[in-house]
Amino acid sequence: MAAGDYNAVRDAIRKIIPQASYDDGSAGPVLVRLAWHASGTYDKASGTGGSNGATMRFKLEAGDEANNGLEYARKYLDPVKKQFPWISYADLWTLAGVVAIEYMGGPKVDWKPGRVDDADVQYVPPNGRLPDATKGEDHIRSVFYRMGFNDQEIVALSGAHNLGRCHAERSGFEGPWVPMPTRFSNTYFKLLLRSQWIKRKNSVGVEQYTDEDNELMMLPTDMALVKDPKFRAWVEKYSDDKDAFYRDFAAAFGKLLELGVVRGPEGKAMRQYARAKL
Ligand code: HIF
Image 1: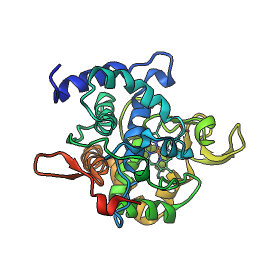
Image 2 (image 1 turned 60 degrees about the horizontal axis):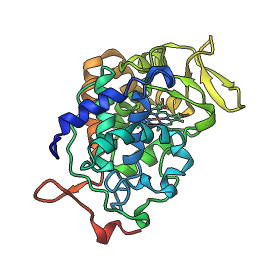
Image 3 (image 1 turned 45 degrees about the vertical axis):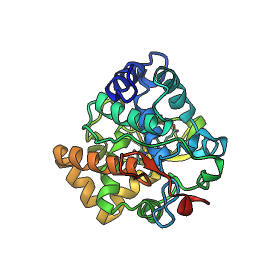
C-alpha cells in the first residue's frame, strides 16, 4: 500500500468500527471521543496541547482520569497502525474520529493530514485541561474559550453527545443520551428541550439527570446548555434545523482537530518548539 493513501486508511478504519462484543456493537463513539480528547487539550494563549504530537501515547496523558476508557479506542486502531505504519498516531486518531462520524450517518468533516509524532513526554499538556462533567456553564465556557471556540461552536460540538454512552467505571456517569447511540442525528438537542429530566443518583451514587424511565441520561454540563439563555438559543436552533446543525458541527469539529497544528509549506505539521515547550 502506497504511503500517503489515506483512502486506504479510511477503509481500514471503517472495517474496525463494527465490534460485536463492545458497546452497542460499535467502536464508533469511542473513536470520536479519542479524536476530541487528543485535540481538546489545546491552549490558545500558550500554543500548547492539541492533537499534533499524539502526546496521549504517554502514560502521563493517557492516565488523566478524563481519558479513562480511551485505551479501547487506541487498541482498536492498533491493527490499522500496523497495516499503515507510515501514518502518524496523531493523524490516525483524528482521522478515525472523522471516519466514525461519517460512518454513523454524520456529516463529512474536513480533515487534513500532516501531524507528526515527534513530541516527547515533556510536551504532554497538564492533566485537567479537559472538561469536568459535574460543572456548569462557566466551566464549559472557560474550557472551550481557552481553545478558541465561541458559544455557537460549543453548542454545535455538543451534539456529539448524540453518540455513545457513559460508563460508571470510566467517568462515574452511566447510560446513553439518546435511544440510538450509534446514529448521528440532532435527537440530543430535541431530547434536551422536550424531556423531563430528573436529577437522580445512579448505581454508583453519582448525580446525573435521567428520563422518567431511567433509560436515557444527561450530564450536568449537558443541562447547562438549556439553563444558560445564550446556549439555549443555539440548542433550539439545532433542534429545529438539522441541516444547520450538520453544517455547523462539521465546521466546529474540523476546527477542533486542527487546533495547534501549524503547517509548513508542504503541509507537514511543525512543532513550534519555542512556544510549545512546557
Ligand atoms: Fe463527551 N463525555 N464531554 N464530548 N463524549 C463522555 C462521552 C463522550 C464531556 C463529558 C463526557 C464532548 C464534550 C464533553 C463524546 C464526545 C464529545 C463522557 C462519558 C463524559 C463524562 C465517558 C464514559 O464514561 O465513558 C464534557 C464535560 C464535555 C464538555 C461539555 C464534545 C462535544 C459533545 C467536544 C464531544 O465531541 C463521545 C462521542 C462520548 C461517548 C464515548 C463512548 O465511549 O461511547
